Amino acid sequence: MASKREENRDDLRKRLIDAAEARIAAQGLAGLKAREVTTDAGCALGALYNAFEDLDRLILHVNSRSLARLGAALEAAVPPGAAPKEVLLALAQGYVDFALENYQLWSAMFNHRLPDGVEAPEWHREEHRVLIAQIIRPLQALRPDLEGLALQRRAKTVFAAVHGVVYLGLTGRFVGTPREVLPSEVAALVEAMMRGLSA
Amino acid sequence: MASKREENRDDLRKRLIDAAEARIAAQGLAGLKAREVTTDAGCALGALYNAFEDLDRLILHVNSRSLARLGAALEAAVPPGAAPKEVLLALAQGYVDFALENYQLWSAMFNHRLPDGVEAPEWHREEHRVLIAQIIRPLQALRPDLEGLALQRRAKTVFAAVHGVVYLGLTGRFVGTPREVLPSEVAALVEAMMRGLSA
Image (cartoon, rainbow over all chains, first blue to last red):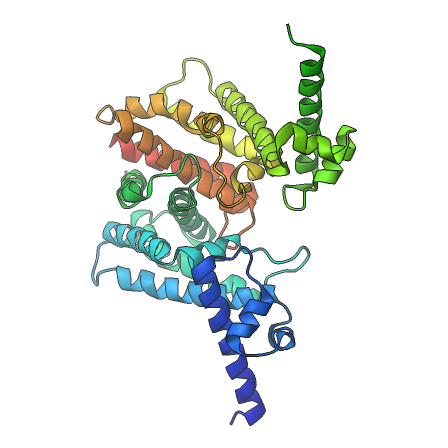
């Protein structure tokens, strides 16, 4: 059974993640201040450093939550019994929807950098597998010649292509796809890739 | 004829752009300091603000140069008389090569943000057309049904897909394509898109 002390610590960590998540969702990652987060969480500034070492590690826990929510959203986006092409189209649209609905939290997953020389822990790196996990099976159905590492890499490439269109579109870069045609352009991209993959 | 005063001003602007470009190429955009740039350029700190308003506008001129160099590199990458598919493959490989060889300057083009509320000038937004300009003609050959705005948008989507793979790969995000397979994965993506586009 968890001791009272552990319970308190877990509760504090949860409140800090909640507070940082709410701040990032509202204002974005840039300019996030440790003191604002601890004020929102109702604790002293030093408590953050006790619980998470620093603000960057706390952000990593926020991103960890976002990844889990994205994984669940992608799973929910695929209709049961869908054919491989439908699965890939549904995953891509699920990705666009998640990015549109959770722009700041989604963007924080890709824009957050740990300080120079600090490596992300293995458990967090592993969590990023949700970004490609559901692509692998339908991709293999379309490309039975790919397996193992080559299949994983191609899944990453398919993800990165879709991500690139969403990212340049939503971050408002000058060559970005306008938001209102993002769903249809992503669908066109995935359809072209799928036709090409199975051609 | 340019007055002596104008000549001096143009010379100072060029030295400042040279200095900022060299700093970004060597150390990246993050942590670029106005004082380092002016020291390298051999002028007073205040001269930068006279010549460019602020460091962000100076960076914009560095990015302007990088875009022009990228445009020239893409043009040089396409063999004369190449068929549409070859053109698109050559442009994609030219893009990968440019990003690999000019990582920091390339990355600055996409990571630099003007301060909140400051819009990039129209001439600079326009320069970003080099990113899609050469895609349009071969794309239209493969998709004669697309024209005008729809063709422009599809060219942006094709660019963003390739860019996404290169960007996630080179910025070392957890789901990125490893650098050593970047050229072959980008080629596979473009080939799949092309087969899909013409299917």
